[in-house]
Structure formats: C-alpha cells, structure tokens
View 1 (cartoon, rainbow, N blue to C red):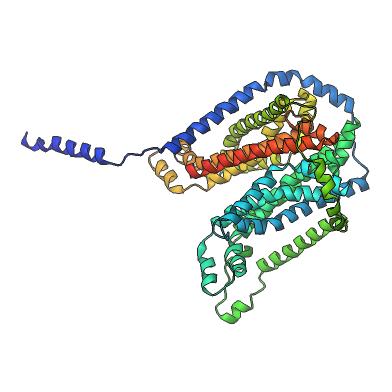
View 2 (cartoon, rainbow, N blue to C red):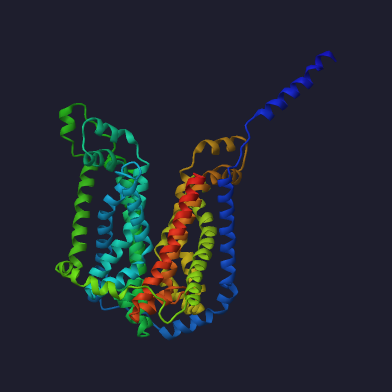
Amino acid sequence: MTALAPAPRAAATTASVAERAPKHRLSPERIAAGLTLAALVVASLFALNSLGISLPSMLESWSNAERFFTRVGSISFPEPLELVQLTALTLGIVVTGTLFAAICSVPIAYLAASNTTPGPGWRAAARFITVFTRALPDVVLAMVFVLLFSLGSLPGILAIGIHSIGMISKLFADAIEQIDEGPRRAVRAAGGSRLQEFTSGILPQVLPSWVATVLHRNDINLRGSVVLGYVGVAGLGLEMSHAFKSLNYSLGLGVAIVMFALCVLMELISSAVRRAMLHGGRASGGPLAATTVEAAARRPWTGSRVRTTVWGWVTAALLIGAVAVCNIQWGDLVTVWAKIPPVAAQFWPPSFGAYDWTRMSGAMLETIAIALAAAVLTLLASIVIGSFAARNVAPNPGTRAGARFLLVGIRGVPEVILAIVLIVITGLGAQAGTLALAFGGIGLAGKLIADSLEEVKGGPERAITATGASRFQRYAAATLPQGAPAIIGHSFYLLDTNIRAATILGIVGGGGIGYYLLNAGQGSNYGVVTAIVLMILVTVLAVEGLAMWMRRVFR
C-alpha cells in the first residue's frame, strides 16, 4: 500500500503540466476571416439556388438539342486555304499579345515586389496597374481599339496584351518576393548595379516560373480570343460570330471544333514546356562539371545544351513568325494619338443611358451570383479530381495520369463555346453561363489544387501513416489540412476570374451584365460601357482586397 501512495501525486503533477501547457487561441482576426468564408459559402449556395439550376430540367431540355442538331445537319468548315489563314492569324494575334504582356510585366513586377521596389509609392502604383488591367475585360479594350485602329489584328493584340499584364505581372511579382536573397546580396556585395542584381541574382531563380505563367496565360488568351470576334477582332472568332449571327450553325460549329482542337493542342504543348522548365534543372542539363576556370569559361556543348539552344532558336523563330503573320500596320501606332481625345470623349462621362440603376445593379448582382455559384460547383468537382491528380493522394500512377489528362482536356474547352452549346439546350439565361463557367474552371482549379497537395510537407503524412491510418485518414488529417490555405487562395483567384468571365459569357447570352455591355457597345452607347466597367472594377477590387486579407490570415 505504501508503494502506491505516490500515484496521486504523479497524477496531480501530470494535471498541472497539462494545465500549464500553452493553449492554442484563435485571434479575433482569424475568427472574422473564418466567419467571412462561411458567409461566402452560404452566399454561393444561395446564389446556386436562386439561379434555378436543375439537372432534371436540363435533361428535359435535351429535345431542344436534338432538334437543333437535326436542323444543323452536317458540320462544315471554311475552305482549306482560308482555314489555314484564319488559324495562323488567330495564333499570331494571341501569341503576339501574350508576348507584349510578358515584356511589359517585367518592370511592373519589379516595382510591385516588396523586396525590389524602390519605395512604397512605386509598389502601390504597380500593384494598382496589375489590378486595374485584370479588371478591364479584354472585350472592352477590343471595343476601344477597334474604334482607334478599325478592324484588323492590332486591336486584338493590344486588348489581349493589356488585359494579360495584370495576371502575369502579379504572379511574377509574387515569385520575386519568394526568391532566395543570397545570390542577390552576393551581386550587391561585389558592387553590382540594380540591373546586374536583377539579371544575375533574381531572374535565374524566377525565370522558370515566369515562363510557366506566360504559357498558361497564352492558353487562356487563345480560349478567350473567341469572344473578341464578336466586337470585330479578326480571326476564327470573327468567322464564328458571323456564322452564328447569320444562322449558319453548320459553319459556326465547324469553327468551334477547330478552336477546341487548337486549345487542346496548345494546352498539351504548354504543359510539356512547363514541366521541362520547372523540373529540368539548370537549362535542363544539371550542374556543370568544370574543374578549372578555363573549363568553366569554355562550357562544353553537351546534348542537353544543344537541345536547349535549338529550342531557344525555334522559339525565337516562332515568335517572329507570329508577329509577321499579324501584318501589323506600325504606322497606325504613330497616327493613333490624334484619335485618342475624340474617342475618349465618347466614353465619358459614365452613364446608364436608357437603363436605370435598379436594372443595372440587378444585372451586376446576377453576374456576381453566376460567379459565386460557378465557383462552388467548380470547387466541389476540383477538390475530388485535383486530389486524385496529386501524386501523394492518388492510389496509383494510372489514376493520377488519368485525372491529369482529364484536367488538360477540360482546360482545352473554351467557356464561350460551351456556353453557346448550353444555350442551345437550356435557352438564354444565367443557367447556361453558370454551368459553362463551372465546367471550364475545373481544369484550372483542379490543376492548382493538385499541385498544392503535392507540395505539402511529407512529415505529417508519414506520421499519420505510421499510426496505422488508412489512405483516406492520412488525406483528411494531414494532406488536406496542410493544403487548405493554398486552396482558399485558389478559391479567391477562381472567384476573381469568374467575375470577369461571367461578364464575357453574358455577351453570348449567358446572363448578367454582359448582355448590356454588348448592347451598349453595338449601339455606340459608350458611356454605358464605362459605367459597367467601373462596376466591374469596384467588384474586382473588393475581391482582390478580400483575397489579400485571407492569404495573410491563413498563411
């Protein structure tokens, strides 16, 4: 009995240690962020319900599609030579516009990154440019440039380029902020200039990420080029819009099939290049094996270096060819300045024209509802598909490869074309726009989620597995919680993208503010266009501010 006496004291000691252990306290800001997320989820579900999306009603509407395709008959295509010319022009406009944005994004990203900017004022101005250019729909920019340059390739190039600056420079600035400062400090300590710091200490670290972002943006621009044809930009999009407007659905669907094939092909090429850039090491050739200064100065022409050089020259030739096929009238860039004041006067002051505030605000709210409803549908599917596409979650390599291939195929479908098909089945309105947006977002969101899950720390996963947990338990307790902050960030990026995309889909009958935007542009009511753009800008700024707050709280 005496030997058992110390037991209560040990229990008391254990209890006191537990009581003295630090408690995990949630900050008020984190609680507020959690409540905001919950409110957004509730709002998304409410929006989904209010839009009246119903699978049974879609199945009932399938007879509309059968009648439509019966009336269309066989699908036709443009003449072979014309098709080649239109395809080359479309690719040239997209590639040249993306190249323009990539070049402009370098100085803007340098000023926007906190570790390279000369001062807070420069950083604020650069960040505003990234948000402003992302908020401006490329179709609105195309309207403006068509007035300035008339029809041709230049309006499409500038519209794609200026709109793309926002995304490329933002992601490039984020990559600069995450660099290893060691090489940059070494260049500075050796007396290097700011330019030398950037080219030798920063650019080599962020170049693969920058190239991957540019390629991804090029894919987005190719899919988005379809709708630019509705406002007069030359290429396959213009041919398709003329076909549908003249009720030549056979030709319109043929052009849509060509666009789909181009998008899938471009996505496959871009994915292969991104993998090579991100995982290929130094110029895909690994470390140099030089043992002396002379040997290092005479870098050997290994097979890897030869391949890299060849691909570099091929890329340069393709870029030059893309610019050449556009047949840009460079003199217009000199004479356009005289046209800017009268064209700008047509867009100011902003007004709602024949519409009132109630109708326009209701249309904007419908666009936001479409974006929210599509985001929640996309995330539900993307978390499942993206998880199976992650190497550390998929049960076997075949499942992962199948999920990755599915995501690539989905990303290849332009949302505008999908919206047109759904409009045929379900009729005009928000239901078609929401479903097209939700399906189109799965490819991007699923890939981002898969990459984020693959990048989580392996320690917690191994610890959970060592306790005898199942694969699902490891996923739920270790993988998903670690990837949750990144998934939250991807969700806001998706919502930001959806707001602009929902506007574009409204142009082809997908509901929301886009319908009024197209009518205002075609009716030369440019003050209404400005008012709609300002509404979109305010919405995007609010989402961007909310996203920055969430990333800071949950990082």
